[in-house]
Amino acid sequence: MARPKKPTYGFVASRGEYRKRIKGPDGRRISLYAKTPEELTEKIAAVQREIEEDVYHRDNPTVEEYATKWLAMHGSHVRTTTLVDYTSKVKIYIIEPLGKKYMAEVTPDDVKMAINKAAQQSALPKKVKSEKGIVVEGLSNCLVKFAKCCTPVPGDPVIGFITRGYGVSVHRCDCPNANPERRKPEEADRWVKVSWVENKLPNYKTSLELSAKDRDNLTLDVAMALSTAKVKVSALSARSMPDGHATISMVVEVKDKSELEGVINKLNNIQGVYHVARASGK
Ligand SMILES: [Zn+2]
Image 1 (cartoon, protein in one colour):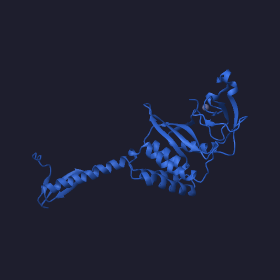
Image 2 (spheres, helix red, strand yellow):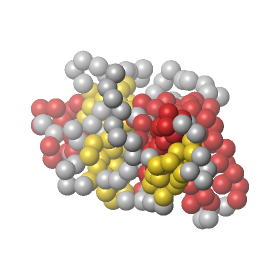
Image 3 (cartoon, rainbow, N blue to C red):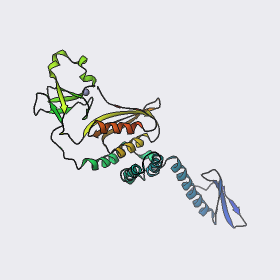
Image 4 (cartoon, helix red, strand yellow):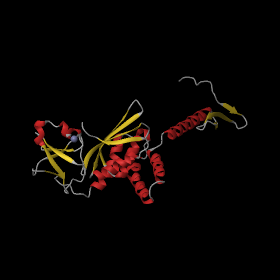
């Protein structure tokens, strides 16, 4: 065993104890006393661990601490009933599963899981229908799918394209891929009128792209907004740009356009968010 270094502690004769002064978390000196050098060494180590944890904790709150602050901040400008609703949701879906984690440890998967639990509740009571809520003019019982480029939801003006392989692909009318000027003349008769009917699916997946000033906790704030909006999230990914901006792409499940607009509003209200766009035209 190596010989211990020259002791850096002193002996206080009046107390009959060894003493070491160390810097506390606030910069002030703390004096530690012990009967033996060994005991003092142990004491120093223990106190230093505490100080380190204290400092770490201050720069890096737990999800519970953060969520509590978030609620306090939002509590001042919503109605009491709304705040009660938010508080219970944040408690059940965010604090319960993630509360003990430090903010820095939260992953997009954690976030996804928490939000999806919140959404399950509202999705459960509805019956799943076999149709997709779309009728195609002049065609009955044809296969329908929603175009990945623009992911329409009920309420969006839509148009159909009869594909070669898989029935009718439904686009938003404002999708670049459905732009009349870009349609190939030889495919003119493949474009068909489609419309939404009452008999809809409980949920429609649609893609959103959020751009914001990059900052700590942005993803969790998005999670908070989505959990209070009670929408299911089937994909979520965040990307930081070198220029200090960030984009978060997500696929949310909503019942129609008005619900989606509510979600977009909530996301737009997050601090630092420049804008939230529906994906289209890829
Ligand atoms: Zn499209």
